[in-house]
Structures are given as structure tokens and as C-alpha cells.
Length: 209
Image (cartoon, rainbow, N blue to C red; front, side, top):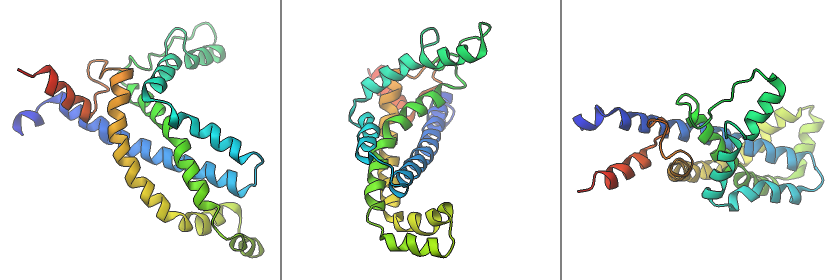
């Protein structure tokens, strides 16, 4: 324990894992429940179409998603740098999304959020669809706005689903973080994107006698 607690690579990988668990979980579940509430409550046409569109990333393999985002983050031909350059002009300096130690973890987090948001949105939509309509009608008569209804009716009645998905998501984030790091960065640059499982993997196989 004395050795491992002095290993900066281990401490950084542990810190990155905690960051991804907290940030990816909060952002993904928050966006999923908000989008689900909008699609269900606002009676938007083509709900099934949006369910399919948002769910597609979940059926793709991590390798495919990692490849897509690696292309998006590419400093020379990537979509993000292209958009930034279009609005910033010719003097724009490309951002190394996967090569900058300060932002590489955020870039991985973005890919993980995109991959998972659709799955949980569909689950929340199914849960919200079972909420009795008369509760919202009564709230309308009482003068409650959409935001008030969301926090007073929708969120409490789907909280059991949120609590269940939260547990599953934290576990899956730990596993998926390893896969995304393995494919997108390999732990680089200079170990800045290393996570707990990738650190263990390298210690087990790279240091094996």
C-alpha cells in the first residue's frame, strides 16, 4: 500500500475513474430524464422515431463508437475542429482533444455520454408513460407550470427507476471507461487518460514475469 499510494500513475487513474463515474453518471442520467420528459409530456410526434434514433448508439460496439469519436476529435480533419475553425477564422489553432492532458478525460466522457444516453432515455420514457394523466391535469388546474410539474409529479414517480438505473450505470461506467480508454487513447498522453481498470491491466500484463 505504501508503494501504490506513492505511484502517481495509480493516483491519477483512480482520480480519472472517480471523475468519469461522477460526471458521466450525472450528465447522462440528467439529460436522459429531461429528454424523456420532453418527448412524453409535450406529445411530440414521432416518439418512436426519436426512441430509435437515440437508442442506436447503445447497440453499436464500443470500438465503433470510439472510432467515430476519434474521427470527430481528429485535430486536422475532425468535425469539432472544423466547426471551431469555421467560426473562429483562419487563425484558429486546432485542439488536441485526445492529445492534451488537460482535456483528454473530458473528451472520453463525451463519448461515453453519447453512447449511454439513449438507453436510459427509453427506460425513463417507458416509466413516465405509466404516470396517470389526471395528475398533470390537476396540476394544470392548480396553476403549476411545466417545471413545477416535473419536480413535483414526474421525478418523484419515476424515482424508483432512476435509483435502479443509477446503480447499473455506475457499474457499467467502470467497465466501459476501460474499453473507451483502451481503444481511444491507450491511457495516453503520458498516462493522463488512464483509468483504474486500464492501470490494473497494464500492471498485470506489462509487468508479468
